Image (cartoon, rainbow over all chains, first blue to last red; front, side):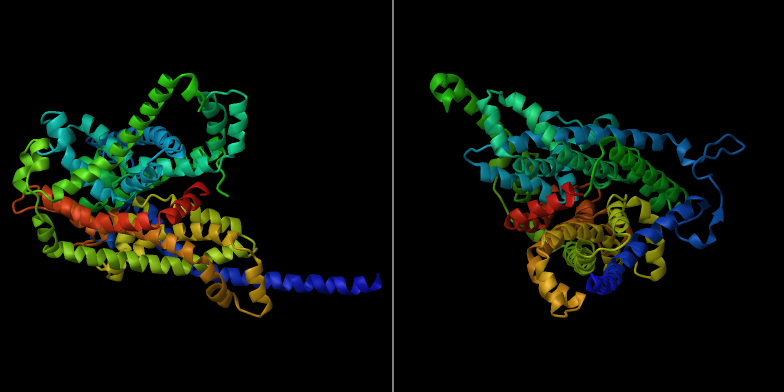
Length: 310
Length: 283
C-alpha cells in the first residue's frame, strides 16, 4: 500500500506532463492551418461585414464613409428606395435561387437514388456504368455550362433548334431557370449517386436475405429497410448539395451573362453589384445577406435533422 | 431465379425493362459529352446541318489546332496548373500537420477547431470576395497567380484537413507509439512514419483538391485580368467577330481541359470514391 501511495502521484504528474507537451505540440501543428484560415477567411469576412455598413467604392476603399443600414434599406426624400432589399431584382434572384435549389436537389436525389440502386444490382456492364457515372462529375462546371449552352442554342443546338424548333431558351427568364436546373441535375446527379451507392454498399446483405425469406417484396424492402438505413448518409449529402446549390454562380454567369445572372442567382447579384458596378459597400451588404441566409439554413438543417458530422 | 421457371414471360419482361433503364441512364450520363466531342471535330460550317447529316460530315482537327495556337488558351493552361499545384501543395503540407494533430492528439478545444474548419467549408465564397479583392489589390498581387493560390486555400485547406483527419484516425496507433518510444519528435513521426502510410490518402486528397482548383471560376474571374485560368478562357472564348460564337473551338477547348481530369478520375476511381465519402458523408 505504501509503495503504491508513493509511486502513484509521480505517475500522474508524469502523464500530465506528457499530455501538456502533446497539447502544446498539437497547437504548433495546427498553427499554419489556423493562420491560413484567419487570413483567407476570417479577415476578408470581417472586411465584408465592415464594408456592408459603409458607402465605399471598390477602386478607393480608403474613402469609405459610415452609412449604417443604408445599403440594406434606405429611402431618399424623393421616395426612391436605394437599399438592395428594396430592389425587385434582388428578390427575383432570391426566388430563382430557392427554386433552383429545391428543384435541382430534389431531382438529383431521386435520380441519384435510381442510378445507385441500378448500379448496386448485378448485371453485365455494371463496371462500365460505374465508370460512366464519374464522367459528368469530372467535367468542370464552366465546361458543362458551355456544352449545354451549345445544345440550347437556337440556331446550332440539338435541343434549342432540334427539339424546340429554334426557341432561344436562355433568353426567356421563365424558361431559362429550368434550362439551368437541367444542367445542374446532369452535372451533379452522379455525385449524389456515388454517395448513395457508398451508403448502399455498407448495408448488411444478410438482412436482405432474411427479408427475402420472409417474402417481403423488393418495394417493401426499399421503403422499410433501405431508405431508413440510408437516412444519415442521405441527409449529409442533401445538406452539402443544398449549400452548393445556394451558392451557385458559374452556370448562371456563363450561360446568361453577368446582367441576367444577377436576377437568377444571389451570388450573381452580389458579384454584379460588388465588382462590375464597383459598389463595395452595397455589394458587401448583399454578401452579408447571403452569408446569413446560408448560415440560417445550415442551422435549420443541423437542428431539424440532427445531422451529425463525426 | 424462381421467377424464371414459374413465369418466364414476366421474368424476361423485367430483365428487358431493367436493361432499357441501364441504357437510358448511360445515354443520359454520356450523351452531352459525346456530342461535344463530335462537335469539336467538326467544321464550323457543318454545325448548321441536321443531326444525321452532321454526324456523317467529314471530321477535322482544325478546331484543336486553332485552340492550341491561341495564346490566351496556352497561358490559361499554364496558369491553371500553377494555381492548382501551388494551392494543393500548401494545403497538403498544412493539412497533414493539422490532420495529425486532430486525428492523434488529445487537447482542449479540439472540437471547436473541427467545427471551425467545417464552418469554413460551407462558407459562401461570395462572402469573402470583396474583402479578398481589396486585400489582393493592396498586397499588389492582382492578376498574379499568387492571388489565386492564396484565395484557393479557402476551400482546399478545410477539405484536406477534414479528409486527412478521417484517414489519420484509421491508422493504427502502434506505429506512432513505437516512434515516440524511440524518441522521435512529432515532425519526425509525421514525415518518416505517418507520411508513407498516408500516401494513398495524400494522393487522393491532393487529386480532389486539384480538381476543385482546376474548376474554380469565381475567384479566377475576379482576381485576374489577363493572366486567366482555363475555365475563364473557355467562358470568354470568342471568335473573329463579336457576334460569332465559335462552338467548334469552344468544344475543342472544353475537351482539352476535361480529358486529363477524366483520365485521372478513371485511373484513381477507387480512391476517389473513398475520398469523396470520407469528405462528404462523414462531413
